[in-house]
Amino acid sequence: MTAQHTVADNKPTIRAFLAQFFGDHRLADDEDIFATGFVNSLFVMQLVSFVETTYDLTVEDDDLEMANFNTVAAIDTFVTRKRSAGAGD
Image 1 (cartoon, helix red, strand yellow):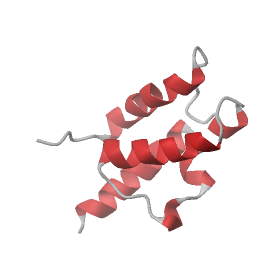
Image 2: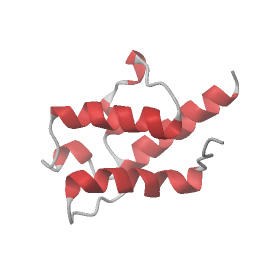
Image 3: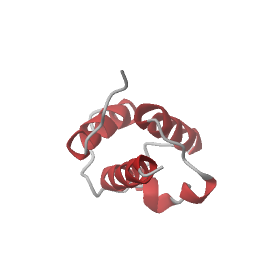
C-alpha cells in the first residue's frame, strides 16, 4: 500500500527532509531556501529526487523552475498541483 499524502502533511514531510541540510535553522514557509547559504548545487538534485520518491511523481524538465522549489510553501504547492494533475490521468 502506498502512502497517501494530503495537503496537511506535505509541509512537515518537506521540513523533515530539509532539516538535514539546515541544522538548527528552522525555515519559515516562505523563506527562500537558496538564499540561506546552507545549500549547494548538489542539494537541488537531492531535493528533486526527494520530491519524486516521496510523492511518487515525476518532475519534468518544465517543472525545474526555481519558483517551484525555493520555499517550503512553493514545494508544497508544487507537490499538491502535480499530484492533483496525476489523479486526473
